[in-house]
Amino acid sequence: MHHLIITADDYGMCPEVNRAIEECLAAGALRATCVMANMPYDTDAAQLRRAFPQASIGIHWTLTLGKPVAAPKQVPDLLAPNGQFWPAAEFRRRWLARRIAPEQVRHELHAQYARFVAVAGQPDFWNTHQNIHVLPGLFMVVVTLAHELGIPAMRSHRRITVPRHGSALTYHLSHPVYWLKGQIIARWAAAAARYGLRMPAGVVSTPGFGPGKAAVEQIVHQMTWPRHAPAELVIHPATRLIPELFGSLTDSRLREYEVFRDPILVNRLAAAGVQTTGFEVLR
Image (cartoon, rainbow, N blue to C red; front, side, top):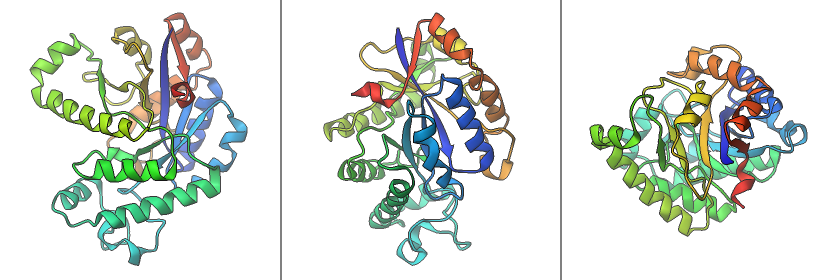
């Protein structure tokens, strides 16, 4: 059997996301979710461990949506004039221009961690909203903090490429920038592993399939599976659309919700030789 960690991001964003993730956890194929500790509905996570003891519950550190947990005067570099975090593109531009102090990032992430622990206990793993930490310099800032806080596992941004048409090799040859970025991120992941952080073999990337992972059965059928560690498939389900929150991930959230709340999916995946699991398998 191949092991697959299916993780639902964005718990805490809104009731529509929380309810969708809870239904998918109850259905069985979904075995992990991560919580946005700065968002208004993060306190729903207090009941997740009781309701779904088989699930891995992680922290989804957020620097590009909503308001900070820390006092605004302590993290002014992170905030737009309206008091909200800068959008992702502007955050990246400012970070690369050295207009965001790393100490302020650490302070805000530590505040979000403390809030998460107060609500849901120690996180089982971490990642970031919109993968905002995957930037030169910032990656190791976040990795170091996670290590200090004793969070045992993280998302690996090594890519397991599953193109809809053709092979991964053909896709890499025709998209050299994509390949090069993947090589750089793989080196960063190796550095994180040296800190003792456990990771899946990589995150499933599906060029040509369109937004979302609703075609999960086709994806796992076409995958070249890693041999020694599970892969991670990331989803973003919701019960209805809220465009001002969801950005480019809109209709795909509804499709994922319909697919992953089906209790038969876990059996269909098992018949295809795929066992879904949480981050505990990394132990």
